[in-house]
Length: 541
Ligand code: VG1
Ligand code: CO
Image (cartoon, rainbow, N blue to C red):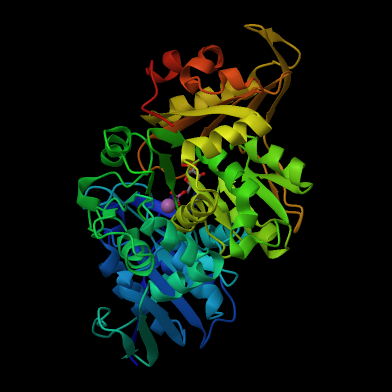
């Protein structure tokens, strides 16, 4: 094999964020940029000689180019085999599934998830460990340290591999196995959920629509929903993965999934609607003219999990990210199990899942999942909802309404201020940290606690600090502020507002109305308009 050793110098800012390294495509297109990062990943790992790596991405612009580069670098660095999803396609949860099923050393996922794609948009890369989950912070820190010291990388001098033909190919002495990215994942879903019951419900008139947003879940949803479950052709909309996601913003929320939302709120709406993001790990759940917040979705899934064959034995525990509402905590309490509170990002759930402390996990950012893989999983959540609908034979709104009536409602909203000036955003966070709020009463709310969330992992003892400023009031209401770690332009401020409402007569109020006083307080406390120039958030979920 002919290996080139290429001299290079470090790039600034190759620090993985909430979920891998995300930058503009143009940044990744610079000579040596991707190579530096990939070599740094390999240099931070030990013992992979001859081992297998899983590789794939969400199909966005630059995916194919990056895959060829990574294959040649893997060969030159001594990997034994790389398993590549056909066409370079592999959803994030399917990558986790395949890493676990075949016991591979790890995997590389190419995605900027919910960020737009195309030559002027975003690209991303992240490394997943052998357990199938995102690299924990100690690994991402080691990778970052390598990026700052890198002097050379290794790459095979070989022609491109045909990644569109299934089967085994040779690349400079390494095996490249092109596999069907859907089959193993679909098989796992069949083990967890009652496909016969869902099929019967669909045949009996349950109508659904799934918006793949021209991203990676199209082929998965068609195979599972239309072929295996018998939903009519056309159930999956925007089902062709496109390099620019058809110029859509592949973020399944009320703003960006507007076609689906219009359908679900229009005349003759289906019973159930759902959407997923760029790389297939997020989900949005809708009923007929009804939006299920991700925090509520986690709680409802937890309360109904035993209706699904894969969870019939009950849950070991639940885990949620700190900004996620406490709705799941109430279910955990009723079930007599623990609810863990972690920092934002799926990488923090891995140790809890591996140790058997939690079965279900969720984030307010449209992420839900379980111990079946080590990533959040969009289609999994859709199937779990379908399984529950098939058994309960009630509408989405009725199921959520009954849930609130039993547990009370954690009224919740997130306000995002996207693309604001980074220095202003950091100044705002410093201002919030510096306030002296404990014990004070603001607009009638008494502050019980004011801190910057820090987390000690109960399994491995690792500590993560500065994970979000919390202002918690005596009645349990709270405001949380943090800056996004997935954006590529300026900064994004996220404000999370929550209040517990036990009174069923008030459960059907619009959260923006029910939370209006806290929303106003949140803006004033952080001086959002004065510091960012924004009077209103860009996205409300
Ligand atoms: C956001 C979400 C976080 C999620 C992360 C990755 O991070 O808030 O909950 O885990 O995206 O999701 P941030 O740092 O921008 O708030 V995905 O689907 O983009 O991989
Ligand atoms: Co995603």
